[in-house]
Image (cartoon, rainbow, N blue to C red; front, side):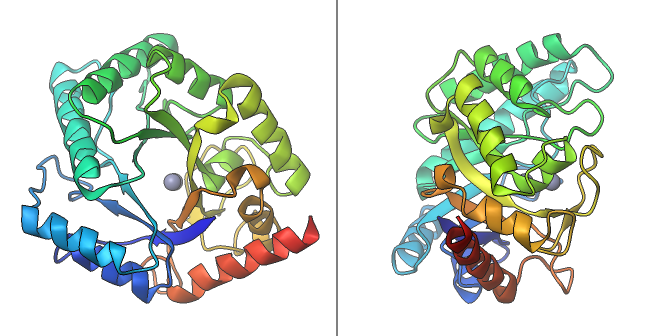
Length: 285
Ligand SMILES: [Zn+2]
Ligand SMILES: [Zn+2]
């Protein structure tokens, strides 16, 4: 498992590698542009080359791009839809340029509308972005189930995948906090194995392509997306250790998106803790 953290690329893409190295990361995740703005960042050829060179010289073996939060591929508003497809396409192209493992995407929101038609719209929009880009995989992230967000259950992820014609570039990003908040009790290795079994049966375990390790501030099934620092939430150290040592996750990048002790994101200490918890989890299996 390649354990690491979500880091900022402020100051230029190569800075993200620097921040990852400072934190002892084996994997990093970045936003390829300001997460609350539509305007795409244009990365120069020099910046991309410098990023690749810095990554090659580091212990970081995987980079994920998180698509920006404004996107709603399931939107009924033609303007939001067009902007979402354009932004996702841009992220996938940047992903291709920097050699990203994948772009991670929240599949969209039905808002207060009908879920099956929202899933169909999301599938169409996602397929458009895939057609407009080459190569870079896209991982649909499971959600905590707040409001009308799509991807709150394995069944919904399976339907989304189906709406995307099962495109082979699509995989899943599993977020531990979101799984727990959407009602999957993954506090034990056995509980998590049950979830992985359901994914194997309904989606295929080989679709699981990346992971977010976040503890949860809110209770099982609360449908609220409130990340806690590793070991400090409802999952606790034991739950995090189970997630980090799951055999089906062995080769995957796993990034922390925690608030951090200083509220400045995951620290080197927290990344190190995750690595220790993985060892503990493995020893207990
Ligand atoms: Zn996440
Ligand atoms: Zn979250």
